[in-house]
Amino acid sequence: MDLNLLDERLESADEPRFRARQVWEWAARGAESYAVMTNLPGELRERLAGEVPFSSLRLVDEALASDGTEKALFETHDGRPVEAVLMRYRDGRRSLCVSSQSGCPLTCTFCATGTMRFGRNLTASEILDQALHFRRKEPVNHAVFMGMGEPLMNLDSVFAACDRFPDIGITHSNIGVSTVGWIPGIERMADEGPPVRLALSLHAADEALRSELMPVNERYPLRDVLDACLRWHERRRRQVFVEYLMLDGVNDRYEQAVALARALEPRRAFKVNLIPYNPTGSDYRGSGRDAIAAFRAALEERGVRTTVRLTRGRDIAAACGQLAARR
Image (cartoon, rainbow, N blue to C red; front, side, top):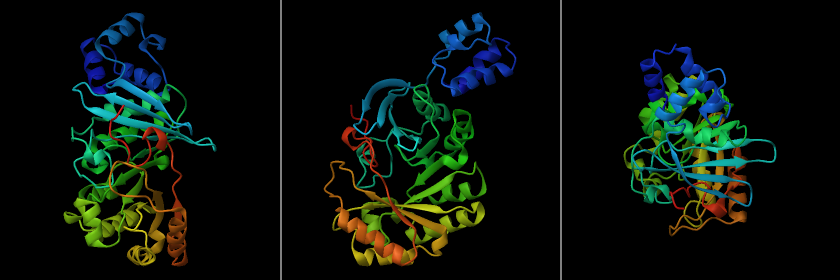
């Protein structure tokens, strides 16, 4: 719900300040309407139902993948599309992938979101309402800002949403914020905000290739980005998760793995997550299993901790890089 509007309506009704906390506590536990908030006066519940919509987002469409992943397409009050994903794992994890912007202005060539028309930054309430939509279905315990948009271009809203995620069931240590390397945001995260995890979308250790894949590299070169990540690591005392999309014949050769390992110094500061490519309508093809395994081995031989991401929701275009607000 629009928490600012809620505060305004409660103040105009001369309600005590604790009423906002009561409403939020119910919403964070998965309440589906004001009607169930039994510690609020009935007249107030009716007034809020008429004046403060229970969600700042309108649900447009939903899809369920064969692996249990669920995707929701929303629309903001001004018609901006937003997508969010719930990933269900056998070990009990229920992880949300939330968006921080409608579309994305950074146009990475491998990402479907980059082909959309950029809308705007989302408010903290619009971010929270993505999470609350799925919380009303079942408990959730992890979240990643890896949906639409560059979170570090909208840090005020991201920080505000992260501050409230523990009430929903998602501790700060289970929140990951992914960036293409937006240095001003990385520097802010080193000095302020909740103790969440930082993930860097890297995808190439060569500056020229990275600029081809990610135009933002022209503005913030990789070496400067890695230096900023190291400063974050030193302040926060946590590893930086490096996301590396495996593209056949583009960035998956042995010598490119060696160059990546060389770039990630000191090794203790980084952990690499290799990401199988999910079709997005681009000209790229994903690396094969053997190529991914060889790339991983080359990194691990050089002391770089490496994992391979488990792909979820590909058959409903809900996997990494596929969000594009299509029904």
